[in-house]
Image (cartoon, rainbow, N blue to C red; front, side):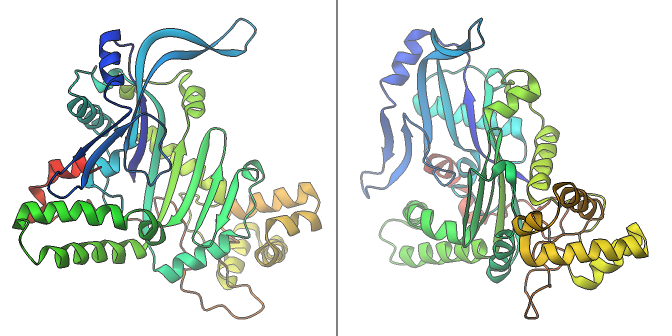
Length: 396
């Protein structure tokens, strides 16, 4: 598990400090004049999406206050700033692998980087409040297996997130008021949003290592980009975007950075993934092929009730949530589905089809942190890239 996009709000700042920041951050970028490559960008505004590698710095003079009638309204206040960026890309320049796993350390490094870039002393990160955290987990799956996973997800219906749901060939997006859950094939996203940016960045790295006149730099850049693409093509990425509303609900306020623990974020990631996919019980291996499901249901519920549940599972596997809910009473549908979950049985990506399915998606795969295909090892970086660690931070 690793952290990606983080949004933090500073304590109230002196007006002279905020005015100095406002004078710098309409759009400030560092450019290598010899090549024209952008090393970093600071700008005033919101990030375009989770792929955005820029750092957002927004000075503010207003905050939402709930009046005596319970209605929120914007009120003038002492100035402060809101910063947002991918702390994963700050560390590595990309988010294909690796990533920070210590939330407190990641936030401290983030605030220190912004302070250095703005050449302004900012309060310690521990005093800042948290307004968004993206928690991610990555799984080793072939591109074909990822495609099969997304084909299976198309049958899943989640009523509470139906309004904000978006399903694509290699990605699904379920927006909610307190959290947003995303699954996507990293290789497809890398191809669209990352290749061109990283090509310019690694050109800077190799020019620094071997000199601008070295004719082999272009080939080195392409080899590095192609290696990242091959790795990304074998990765399924799951993200839970934790909104400010969720943090306020759990803590009674927007918590300070030092109040948010890694254990809390891990529990929240697990619970949101489980609620969305209706599977992921940590204490029981998930089964989804016909023989294993029959054996599991009979073992858990007995011979007669197990066969009854198997019939329900077969219908749900073929037709999906929406059609099954129309054919069964509301109470029966939700009772039986809950019993499948309790038994660790999945109806997504099964081998129940009109035509036999010899799929490439592992029969026991589930996008939870206990799955054996989850990527846990830290990033391995060659010694030649260590000299550019500060450049990697700036390039993000």
